Image (tube, rainbow, N blue to C red):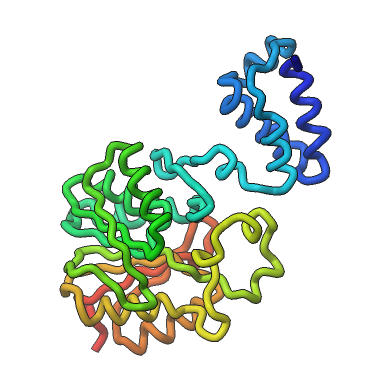
Length: 284
């Protein structure tokens, strides 16, 4: 039976061609806690402790193939919630957490009654907003049954009861019959030409239908949602998107053509990553 030190040495030697030293150490302590329920202080104090898990070889194999650690563990954290994951849904990003923070800051004094999250995936946005606005009715929409099953699992796991699911395809204009106070969406927004700069851990493992859009119309989801927003929602309804910074110009032109009030918002790196759109101040 190997000791903790022996596992660490093996872990480093197997992964050194894929990850840098700091990342290897971080991953080791992550899986040490996950597989052995051992904190790193015990590793330093008692490195001769025998390992108990038989899954270290599987973990190393999957990491060598650059599978994201979130899929290996099967969950991640998002805005204080534990979000279960599988390869039918995207891994939540820190940028998306910041979008939730922006929405909360904007609306905490006037909480929305109905929230609608389009293209919900794992449900991370819907669930975080449901927790922040516990009196709201939150609708999580996706076109994939597999994704909606993950949302239901995450709602139960986090004991959030004010989320309901709706199966509908944005491209087919399948929307619930509601008049939301808040619409939020983080739709697919990566063009296929960007694959040359993307890492294997994304391309090989995350669902392509949640990532990519047609090269000839990369803002197609935004256009469809904005048109629905104009025609079917209340005057006070707000719309928030996460966006691809590459397509700010395209979105700027389209939203201006609709004579809506809007603002591009920056992420923590100072990049235009989000847009907030309002109806009540429609530009004349």
